[in-house]
Image 1: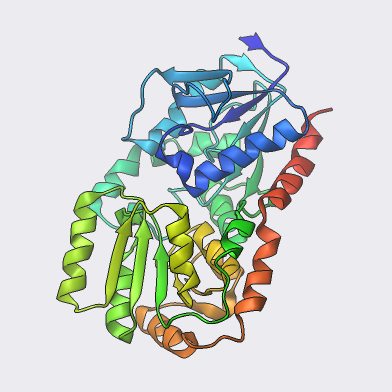
Image 2: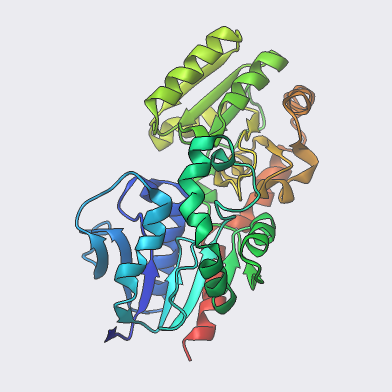
Amino acid sequence: MKKIKKVAIIAHGLGSSRGYSGEGKVYFEGIKTLEEHNLGYIIISFSKISSLDYRKIESKYVIPFKLRKFDKYQRLLVWLAARKIKPLFYLNLSGVPIPLSKISHHVIYAGAPAISTAPSKYSSSLFWKLYLLPFKIITKKLSDEAKKAYIIANSYYSLKKIEEAYNTKVKKVIYPPVDVDFYKRAFSENKSSQFLTIGRIERGKMLENSIKVSAKSGIRGIIIGSLGDKKYLHYLQKLTKRLNAKIDIYTDLPPEKVLEIMRNTSVYFHPTIGEHFGIPVIEAMAAGLVPVVPKESGSAEIIPEYSYNTIDEASELIKKIINDEIKRKEISEKAEDFKSEKFRERLYAELEKFLY
């Protein structure tokens, strides 16, 4: 085992499509936190990383090529590379309590785990239940590590699910980083009577709920997301026609185009029940969109007055607030607390404990 005077960052999917997701944003802000305080680091990933933006980086990896399948098991197998070094401490941004505490201090930043009781695609079918079966078999080993590690949750909703799944205690809650200033550029008091949904085009995001809300309420909606599953996209298109819903679906839009749509949209609808946080909710708030979110989610603790249990409830709520301009500025200002620099400040305050 090689001993190094650096922080080992566990970021198993860095350099893949996750680099552009909410999780990818956490990876980059975690790295930036260390850079701001002149701390050296090494990236531990499942697949090889050749560069990070313009920088060459030191890294360890398990395989020298990208693998798109078996994401949950990549998070476990990154241990094969991580165990070979002894860093100042591990900063595990991939969320799974792989056994590292016996080597060095292990800090984990995590959302609700896939094996928790939170509704998700993993509880939706026999296929996904079988997919997670090996993960559940080793839950005791994960629980043993969770008790030794220093866990930071990305919401109080996640805190509850982590503690239930691993029978442990979470030390802190730090909400994820959001590019608030960027989305504030889309703020406008006068917006059109339509709603927006943002999420990767994959089944776990439950985007069909947005189509059902449009059909139920009669209000036009827009779905924006990076294309992850073409079959699911075709399903959404067919469902839109079958329900006669007023929905437009756009994939892989450039950021400026997303801002343009936000500038002209009054409500944000989040369809993903069981989402441990939901960064698009805060992005929409910054742009002055009133969010409607599931009660069963981390975002409900941010904006509980606009949360729903059923599609019927969500439809009625959207109809009620679609033309309400009063709350826009207040909601946009509320998003300020989720700025990236505040995330970095809060994260470093926890990491500092392991430097001395």
